[in-house]
Image (tube, rainbow, N blue to C red; front, side, top):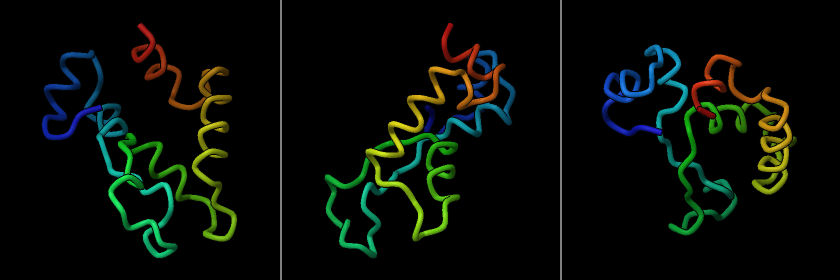
Length: 92
């Protein structure tokens, strides 16, 4: 993941700028702030793609952080989390 230099990150890893954008570091609240997750221990680093994917669910159907982690792990094993070309670069 990168925080401030998308172009440098992309060049160093042979990615397009679009691919690198998916890997920008973001802060993810494990428990929504509105649900009481306001403390610092509730925040973890997540790539932009992961953060956005978790929030595509309807609020009432959004998975818990543990359930989402399990979902991501299954999809990563099947090489179906990131696009195939990005997955290839990330696992080299």
